[in-house]
Length: 107
Image 1 (cartoon, rainbow, N blue to C red):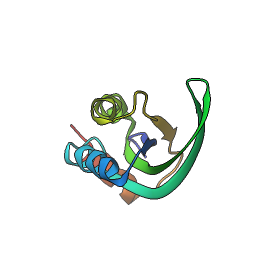
Image 2 (image 1 turned 180 degrees about the vertical axis):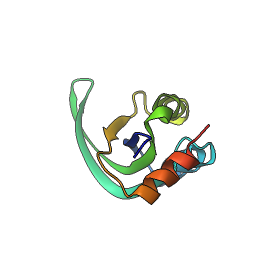
Image 3 (image 1 turned 90 degrees about the vertical axis):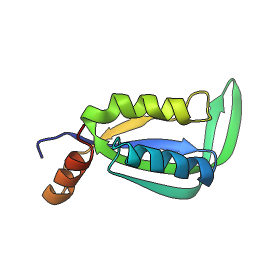
C-alpha cells in the first residue's frame, strides 16, 4: 500500500446533512466512499452539560494526503460549531481497494 489511507469519522445531526456532505466530498474527490450509519446515539459533554443526540455517523474513506482539505471542507459545510473530524489510520487494505481509493482521491 503506497498511499496512506485513513477512515475519517464525522457525525451529522440528520440524514439530509449527512447526504449533502457525503455527495459533496465524493464529487469533489476528497473521499472515495462515504458510508452513512443511521440512528447513532451519541452521549457527550458540551459546554459543561451532559448531552445526548441521535445522529448519523459518516465513515469517510480517503487518502491521508487529502485529510487537511477534507477537514476544511467539512468545517465549511457542517452545521455544528465543532464537528467531529477524526482520522483513523488504515494499517492494511486489499491492494485493489487501496489503489481505487488512491486513484479516486488524486488531485
